[in-house]
Image 1: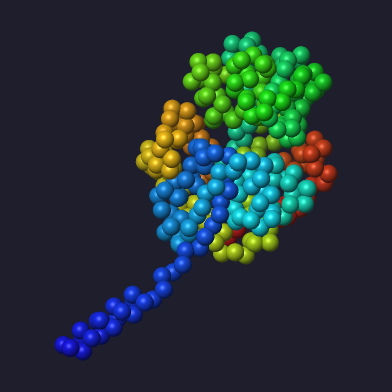
Image 2: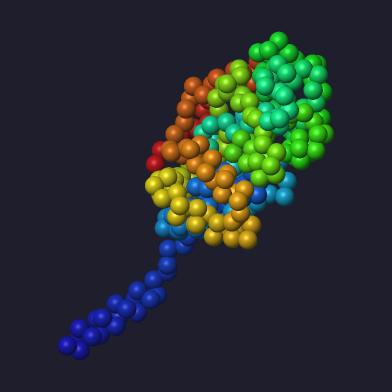
Length: 315
């Protein structure tokens, strides 16, 4: 009996002194402040999917949205939320970035006008003022959309509204905006009782593309925590799709005072159908077509091999 008790005591002491498995730290840089586009990431954090895989994920909201890809390229963080078209431009500029996952697998970008503006077609934009926030891809997007109606950038007046898309439209500063997210700005305008009408790029001459993607440094792709991160994200995505109401509660619990509002509630409803169901999955044709489009628009000089900037990590 004494031997049994002694053995149990020694076993207990041994277990106490065994080092706990250290959690792997992951620094995740968002593209903007937390919003329903990041639903799967926040649910994975709040519901414990990351923790269950021994990941300690630090989620960082950037002060400057242009910085996350640069910080990943410099090895200052592990994963960043990026945009597929911008990624292709960043890679063309020499940044060592690779897409490893997808969050939102449809375009969100759109051209938006006030519903009562009398603008029924993109052809009606001739001679109008169009607001934008980021030159480059967005203005090229608009050019391609206008081209279907025999219009060019010379037929409109471009106005930099410095991220103030909805306010500039509602105030009459501009007649339309490019860069408005259909799941956010349209709801924001509706809440202001100034409903909008959206024209979607993928219906007007622009290839469909992934709006939000996850990127890592191409020199770190052998790091196992990237694989583990995606596994946890996939599990969170399944949970979110199966339990959207509970997932909403998990989402707003991240920052209740900031996230639990009517705008995010409406955006949540409109975002869920656009979340990718398979974060790892890579649509090669989609990336190839967008690269060709961007070359035609003069945004990149050559169409790079897909493996240079987008891969599907195996689980």
